[in-house]
Length: 140
Image (cartoon, rainbow, N blue to C red):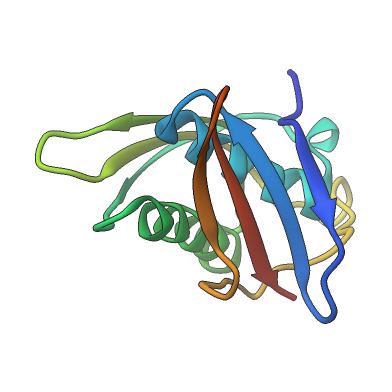
């Protein structure tokens, strides 16, 4: 498994990172995995439970916010952390996020940082010569 390429960005109170990808669905998938990696380290996780999540949003930032919010909810409510992620556009707008998740186990998973929520603060998706880049701030 290859960890997503992301860069941690200095932020005064929360956890911020930047992630890049070729297109928006790939960016959303990479951001979800970057958040999981930042929290637990993907190397400590195994994809054992498939989960599908519908993400809605009128623009790229809201789609990304929706996906990250769903990932935080999965961890909080169901004890599931994404290990693999694939996103595909759906007719009429939005994305379908297919995740391979691991069940959190304190004996196997030590949290590096825990996210309370995705935030809209500073959330930015922009086009680049290579595709798209997002700046994300997660509430800790």
